[in-house]
Image (cartoon, rainbow, N blue to C red; front, side):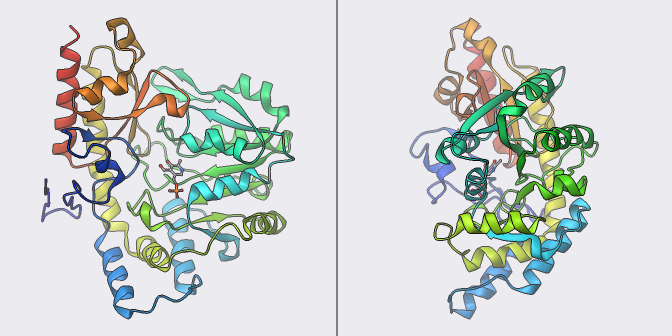
Length: 387
Ligand SMILES: Cc1ncc(COP(=O)(O)O)c(C=O)c1O
């Protein structure tokens, strides 16, 4: 499956038989993997060239982030998201999951509550427990074509929480929270003196121009003071296994507490991840434009295909390359495990139960259109067997 297209900046080298977790899961079986959140596209050429140049140097001693790297990140966040951060606010991290697990240790005292809006990326569900805290779930509500916070429930649970774990844009429902929604969250945070961890790893992947990404901490000084924002180049430029990311913590005392909690547990970053981060933020815009155009097409393809699939519904994806499919109606046709059903018919999807929502599936459309079309065709054929 080499889908190289000279006219495009997006290359899709063969991944079967490689080290890919996504493809290895179904090694030796004819199952198209549309599950774990990485894309089947090679990283941007400037990132590859920066990595090659660094490798050619040949010495891989311990490295600190350097000024042109922090400049690239600060400038990139200002250019892409209109948020002017200070380089001093950055705390480098070898992964965003590590970053939010550190944050959970700062939420009040052991036994205190941490709120998360569900369904959500599975490590959110385990993070409070791993830090000796209690998970408080607030289920998102589906209203028409969109998923929204259940404000009444959030207000009810607010006083039991010491921290909110926000996912913006939200994996798996694909929402890019509006300024108004974020303002509501900020008001709750201020009223109840919450710490907020905002996982913004997907913020570079906005597909709907009507739903620009707004960083929660950019709203005002009070919310900035209580927010730990996590970002990484990993999803946007498809370099997740290079493990480079950062927290943005404007408040100096909170930043010191966070760095203290990291001590002895969180390692320094791999120098190749740092090199790739600089190149991505500084020179990755052209590739990203091509990617967003492809992902928009793919998102429409998924919407149209699912609309014609009996028993399945979905909602428009504002951001991310992940579609959230409601398959609960399939139970009426004898399909109690939709993930297993589609896997038997040659498509590997993520099971919603891992996100706290049995009966749903997450479909990763970060792949070449031909592969996506083939997978959707297999899903149609699978459903035809139920008639
Ligand atoms: C919301 C969210 N946070 C974090 C991660 C993973 O972050 P990392 O690999 O940097 O730990 C993912 C990966 O899918 C994600 O969707």
